[in-house]
Image 1: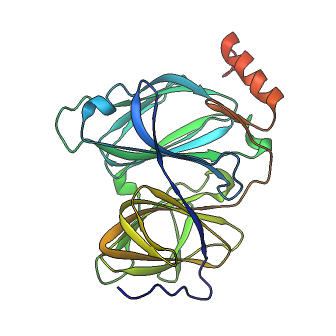
Image 2: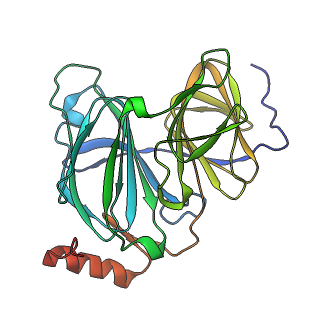
Length: 292
């Protein structure tokens, strides 16, 4: 493969962060990338990847637990999760679909995998997205986005495609909207699947941060080939220049308007001060986290 030459208007790759093995919920095995105190991540806070063909790695799921001050976006490639919350919402999302949740001042929910012994196992992602201080105590909301609602567009003649999950994107010179437009901080999320050796230039707002998670194959960059499991942070510019190696690449592409506000994080709560975190803990312990 020829040497990667970055176009003049393309964003430089600043650095990559390898995801780390971890567990959450009732022992679900995940790969995690966290950036709570890294302004290059903003408005995103964390990415978790669940990827296993062994049901023992994920079947216990995420029993009821609280959140305050964030939004979450769950996107599935294989398998199925069901959401339930204290508001009475209930819905399932399977391969190709997504779930969005705005915790606001407080939500208590569970995320449980379908009890399916067969199939292709579980592969999906959950993103935590920060909320502006002025919005953190707003009303919680939730919605399912089924696979057929997500636009799937070709990006070349080699079979590469992009699936628009959240935000606005420019594809083949045309501005396109994803079904989820009201995510925090103008957050954009797309699933880009590049054919072997394919390259795409993906325009982005210059004021936005830009990140890519490699979940399949490898990405060719000015710093060499980056295999799956790595989260890439990009600098300023008008576009992402993304090229797959000869195995192809599956990429979760992210952009958003940075929130330049202090972040204090404790477990499922993300606020702007220690006092607000302590209040969230008191509210949860007192049973008032979700009160209006």
